[in-house]
Image (spheres, rainbow, N blue to C red):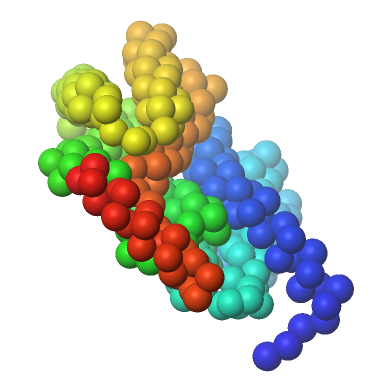
Length: 318
């Protein structure tokens, strides 16, 4: 498979920028999804894949306000943009020399994830915005954000197996912390599902007390923060960049403050979307710290000795 030089050369030159755009797009579409929800536009396009029966785009409808149609249609259109960016990442990985399997696989996961999200989004609409379908939709987005960070990192890493820069205990702590983050995000979707922003006035809510779910969400945040503090003390003395850790602490604290203000002020619409943006930022920062505590040596004839010496140097810290 070949392509014109005028296309491949600028694509390969800009692949890191495209990968960054993918991270932003995967997080951004979750934010636009929250805007759909807080404006009550979840069923602005009541069918799928068409917006209304007989039309892919919004048309005058006696039962759906134009604003709701265009908000929902705009979110659907952004899925196409994310798909284009993901496709560019796949093409950049395919035409790269040498073709790197890990980069290509991560790019293909992104493209497949966009397709999966389109299907899940359709199911969400066709089931009348059932709360658990919305939760799944959001959680998939956050998983794709994490993997998009790994894709970006893979462009500057080598292809050797990952070698931790920290002892096994800290690797395990990070893995558990990632699991707690997943539970924290899940609990956040429960709070939203039981709260006032259903995406449509007729949508049934999760029949659990919002206060109880909010407390669970807050408890998981405190657990995540506690693990983060422990990780910070444990990272001292290890050859790990400090900036990713500092950024993660700052983002988590800001997200926690925003969540409390959101709760105390009655969950205003704008803060809901900002909180979703913050959730994406926490995922990005956590994934970035994950990457920073591991190295992948470059493989090749010229890099062989360097890879071996790098592995020996890292092993001395494990």
